[in-house]
Length: 371
Ligand SMILES: *[C@@H]1O[C@H](CO)[C@@H](O)[C@H](O)[C@H]1NC(C)=O
Ligand SMILES: *[C@@H]1O[C@H](CO)[C@@H](O)[C@H](O)[C@H]1NC(C)=O
Ligand SMILES: *[C@@H]1O[C@H](CO)[C@@H](O)[C@H](O)[C@H]1NC(C)=O
Ligand SMILES: *[C@@H]1O[C@H](CO)[C@@H](O)[C@H](O)[C@H]1NC(C)=O
Ligand SMILES: *[C@@H]1O[C@H](CO)[C@@H](O)[C@H](O)[C@H]1NC(C)=O
Ligand SMILES: *[C@@H]1O[C@H](CO)[C@@H](O)[C@H](O)[C@H]1NC(C)=O
Image 1 (cartoon, rainbow, N blue to C red):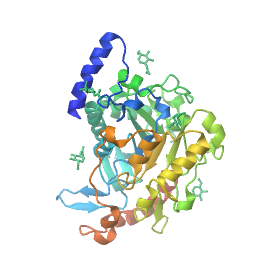
Image 2: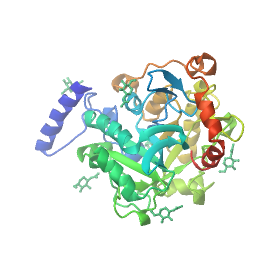
Image 3: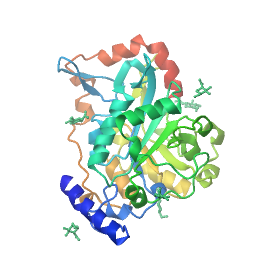
Image 4: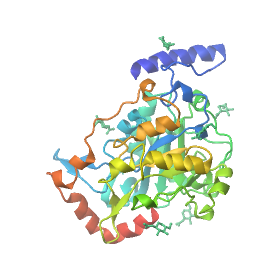
């Protein structure tokens, strides 16, 4: 990637002097991994998303042993996700003893550290990859104010990349191209669920998610439960055609939970190869095709658990009309979840489950609210 950076900074400077910044039909000058995406609008690209990006299934404990948690949604960290071609990262923001932490439903269940340290990880990757547009979606679990979130973005030094659209109070019909966002160095789109524009005068780049985006359902526990129908914001539930024409961008949740009883849900890892496959009943590829037909265009966002399993990157590439051979996407080497599942765990095997039990009541409440 370093050689790309050097080459392209040079290209960039030369073009700027010439007064034109044209995308090069050259794999060395790629926007979000492809030269063909440079001239396309942000809203006309399928951005592959890692659901609950910082919540990893295996974590390194202080004694250096690996422990596993059922509360994880991904195998590899956000840096490795971005390197592989993921361009949308989601996380939940919780107030933990007065600090803003990325916890999964509850901080006693899974605490991935502070928001600012995670944003620094994302910024570090963006610094090293200046031709990539990244989107973050923060679930505002404890109603952090715009000023409080803004302070975290400033602390991480990532605010410099923030994109602010012309209107922050209604859906915008014309998003810029990736090339325009890259040229302006405003390559970070940040959605917050929720943060009404009326309560946000200090940080207009923190966009209220459901002003700009609509989602299908996310609480799926059976392959037959996947749907393309608009589910959120609640005001547009079931009015899919209307919400598409309003200019809100389609955001497709495609992950499956399993119930562990007591109202506790965790990712259905046994079925992940099917859920994340390119074809077949219940697959990401089939859902994307079905929903493309319903919406009249491909979903702008695809959100998956364990993106490294199945064919998620190639499904997104195919919706974008690009092939992996030119992209520079670096897939992580991870083993199938089936071989790291419950039966194969040797270290602290029940830690995740115990954590779930301790906070069962609380998790039940928040699982109902949060995706
Ligand atoms: C792409 O650009 C790089 C850097 O300018 C150049 O070395 C390479 O030959 C170009 N490749 C093609 C296929 O034009
Ligand atoms: C981008 O536009 C093309 C041509 O209209 C369309 O086929 C494709 O589905 C669009 N993709 C997205 C993500 O909007
Ligand atoms: C992300 O994971 C990779 C591979 O395991 C590791 O080398 C890197 O240090 C991690 N980065 C961060 C910021 O945790
Ligand atoms: C969230 O915070 C805003 C101020 O930032 C306040 O107006 C609103 O009432 C709060 N909502 C809840 C549910 O606490
Ligand atoms: C890029 O920056 C210029 C100057 O600030 C501004 O007029 C233009 O709207 C920006 N373009 C985009 C796509 O943000
Ligand atoms: C998912 O949520 C909807 C309401 O948004 C509810 O009607 C449905 O029963 C829920 N499904 C599951 C499996 O919890």
